[in-house]
Figure 1 (cartoon, rainbow, N blue to C red):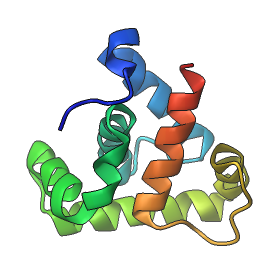
Figure 2: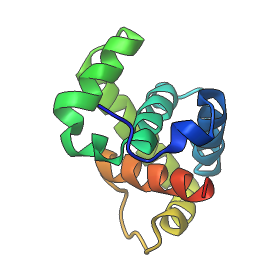
Figure 3: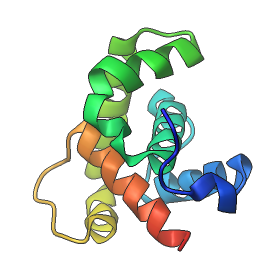
Length: 125
C-alpha cells in the first residue's frame, strides 16, 4: 500500500520507530512484551497509511506475522495482551488523551493501533 500521510518524506524510519516506542512506553507497554515489536511495526505502517487498519485481520496481521516469522493468530493475541497490560497498568488515561475522548474500556486491537498512529502523526505536524 502507498503511504498517504506524507510522514516518510519528513522523518526517517528510525525517527518514526523511536517516536512510536516512546509513545508505547508512555502507555506502559515495555519492550519485554512480544506485542511491543508487533505494535511498533503495525503502528508505523498505519502512520504511513492510515487505511491499514481497515483490513487488519486480512492484511496487517499476516504481513506482521510473516515479517517476524510468526502466525497471524499469535500476532493478534500478543497485541491484545499488550493492550490489556497497558490498560491494567494505568495506561488508559494516557490513551484517552491520545484519542481525544474518554475511554471506558480497553480498545480493540484496531482501535488501539488507530489511536496511537493518530497520536504519533499529530506529534509530527
